[in-house]
Image 1 (cartoon, rainbow, N blue to C red):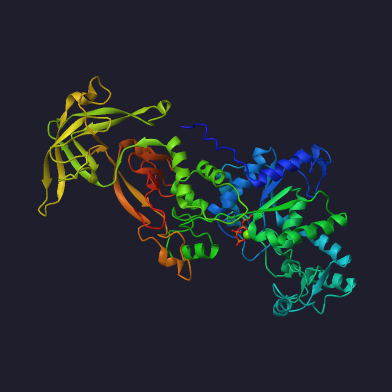
Image 2 (image 1 turned 135 degrees about the vertical axis):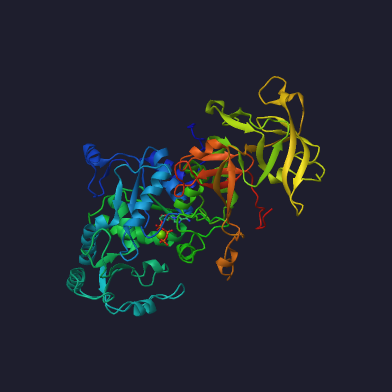
Length: 589
Ligand code: ATP
Ligand code: MG
C-alpha cells in the first residue's frame, strides 16, 4: 500500500530566509564545540562543527504533545532535514514537580510517529545541571549575579510595572564572597524552599521586565525524575534554555512569539558566558514564530486536563482530543500533519487556522493511501426476489479507483443485502436518483436492481425493500452498461457481513472559539462528538489490523482502533468525513 507521499510545495518563509542568509555568509562555519560532550561521530570530525544548521525541539515532559507541538516539530525537524542539518530532541526538564517519565516516553513516541529521527541527538537539560551551576558561580564571581533573600512577594512588589521602573533589592550589592557562599549553601541544601533566589544582576530600570534581575535558581527540595535527589536548586527556563542551546551548538533556536521579550535575556546570558570564555561564538540565535491557533480546538494544558479529569472524553488518547496520541487513534496520519505544517506555513503574527484546513490535509493524504471498502452504517434490508436463495457469487472490486496497482478483491454477493437506509425513500423528491418504488439503481460493482415492493412493520416503518435484478448488467461484463441508471449505491451481503462497532467521531466543540469571552468552554462541548453504532461491513474488513485505514465508500475515512481492536474483530473510528460538513461560522450543515 505504500506510495511515495505527496511532496508539499516548497514555499518560502521568513525562517528559511534567515537560514539561507546564514548559510550564504558562513555564519556558523568552523564553529567550535559548545561544550556538550559530542558523539563519537562528531569527535571524529575534529574540533569544529561543520557549517550546518542545528535546530532543536525542546518539550517540557509535563504533558502529552498536541497539534500545536506538531507544528513546532515539523518546523524544527523539517528545516534540519531540508538543509542537511540536525535537529536535537531536548527535554526541558527543569521543573521536577510537574515532570514524569511517562510523558518523556509518550513524547519520544509522538516525534517518531510524526516521521522524525533525532538519531544520537537526544538530550536533557538536566544533563547540564552541573555545567549550568558552574556557569552560575562564574557569573557570581564576575559580579553578574547575586543571591536575593527577599520573599517572593517582596520581589514581586519591587519588580515595577510596564510604566514604572523596578526597585533594587536590599541584597543587590552583596559582596561576591558572600553571594558565592550563599549559593554554595543553597546547593548543599542548607535552606528551605523560597529562602533565597539566585538572580542575574542586569537592570532594575529596564523597560523590559525580563531584564529586571531575573531569577536563575530557586530552591526546591524535590526529587527529579532523572537526577533524583542530587539537586535541591533548579534552574529557571530562561537560565537553562539559551545556555543549553549554546552547549549543544544550536544555530537557530525557534520558539513561539511569547518569548520575543525574553530574547534580550537569552542573549545576555550567552554573551556574558562567551565573554568569560565558557561558551563559544557564534552563539545561537532565537527566532520567534506564531504559535498554532486552531478553531474548534482547545490546546491549553489546563483545559485538556479538565476534559480528561471530568470525563468529557475517554482519556488523553481519546480520538477527539487534540493530543497526538488522540489524533493517531482518530486515524490522522503523520503525512497529513506534515502536509498541514507546510500548508499553514510560518508567520510572525498570530492568526487562526480553520480546523477544516487540518481535515482537508488528512483527507488528501488518506485519499491517496486508504483502500476502499463498502460499509453500511444505517442498515436497511434489500431482498432480490429473482435471485436464488442458495446462490452466491463474487464481485471483483478495485481497492482504489485511481491506483490499479493496489489490486482488486472479491466481495460476496447474495440474495439478501444491507443497504443504507437513506438510499431509499418512498416518495422521492425531484432529483433523487437512488431507490424508490419502481426506480432502478446500480448496486456498485454488481447488478442493476429495480424496486418492486416494500415491507413495513405494524407502525408503518419500512423494514425491507424488495427488488428484482437484471442478470445481464453485472459490472465488468460485456454490455453491463447497456442499461443506463443514475443512482449507484453501496451494499453488503447480509449473510457475509461483518458486524463491527464503529465510532462516528466529530468535532469536540460546536463553536470556532470554545469558551470565548467569559463563557465556560465546557458549555461549547459538542454533545454529538461521539456516536457508537453497530455497522455491517464487507467481510474483508474483519482482517483489518490496528491502525489500518480505509475509505468506507461514500462515508469517509476510518481506522481500525489501536486499542480496542482484537484479531478478527476490529473496532473502527471515523477519522474524517469525505466532505466538510461544517459551515464556517459554527453551524453544522
Ligand atoms: P507549557 O505551558 O507547559 O510551557 P507548552 O505547550 O509551551 O506548555 P512545551 O513543552 O514548553 O509546552 O512546548 C514545547 C515546544 O512546542 C515549545 O518550543 C513551544 O514553543 C512549542 N509549542 C507549544 N505550543 C505550540 C503551538 N500551539 N504552536 C506551535 N508551537 C507550540
Ligand atoms: Mg512552554
